[in-house]
Length: 315
Image (tube, rainbow, N blue to C red; front, side):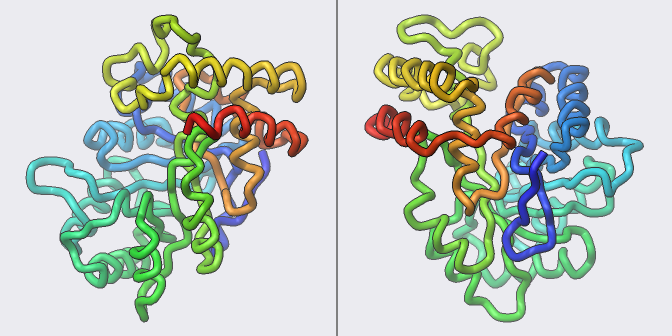
């Protein structure tokens, strides 16, 4: 597994990391979840991303159980805060950051996380209050570093301009062959201020594996067929023109690059120097093995361009 430095920090993370959004918050059985987490660690995927809201604490609890007994220095943990945990606990106020971080640490069975991220921007809380609370969390040793997910550019700039606060080292945007929006403004600006990218949904929630056939009902066991895990899947990505183009991309990946479409799509994401790591989801250990191989691939730029030409009009 290859590693890259995350922003202006000394944190080295694998280019492929493991997420827990819909899978380890109740989407699959506990034994499957633990098997996937352990397989990831065996392969050198030792950066694990979660959030307090995933299953309202269930994903963090699952990770805490799976990691129990392992040396703390053998893995890196990232979690997030912002979305409602109940009717009253939500947002990025000082009180909520303190409370939610302590709750996350308890569920994860650790005294610190390596990265604490603002899951979205909180327009109802002054930025100064949020950044002060995050800075105190760093000073107390409850998190080594701080980051954010899906913040608008103006808020990123405002945080970078604040004096005497901890600095963000990571951004977590959605990024894939079907969603390239962050390339335009977020990537270059973050690079200027020492912020690396840990991207989510690099396989467009499984669509970029090529498993969905145009005009066919999603097969049982796939995310699109699952009542809970398929809820957030963009219906546009399952439209026949999109799936037709993806099948063409799959042929290019397999016949011209000699790799699976999933590996090709991950390698495309990792071609950007701004991207430190791509977060994958997995319901089976063998999926992790396949995706981990993408870290080692060297694919011709002209093949990337060929697939981009196919998919760009459908984004």
